[in-house]
Image (cartoon, rainbow, N blue to C red):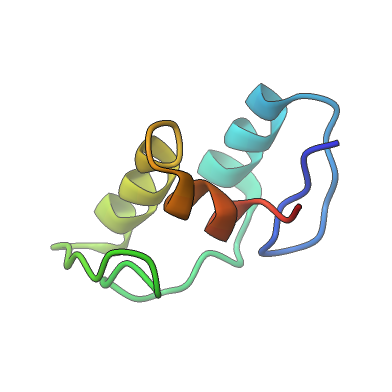
Amino acid sequence: MPTCRLCGKTFDTMSELYIHLRSECGKIPRTRKCPPVCGGRYRSIRFMKLHLINEALVDGRHMSYLIST
C-alpha cells in the first residue's frame, strides 16, 4: 500500500496518493528548495510541490522521498 512519507497516511492506489500530495498534505516542507533530493530552487512553494510530485513519476530519488517503503 502506498504511504505518504510526510504524514503517514496510507492509500489503496498511487493515484490516490498523488491526489493527497497535491491537495491535502500540509506536511510538504514550506521551503523553496527541493529537500535532500536534487537541490533545485523554485520561485514559490507551489512550484516546489509540483516539482516533487511530477519528478516522482520519473525519478526514483523523488519517489522515495514522498513514499515510504
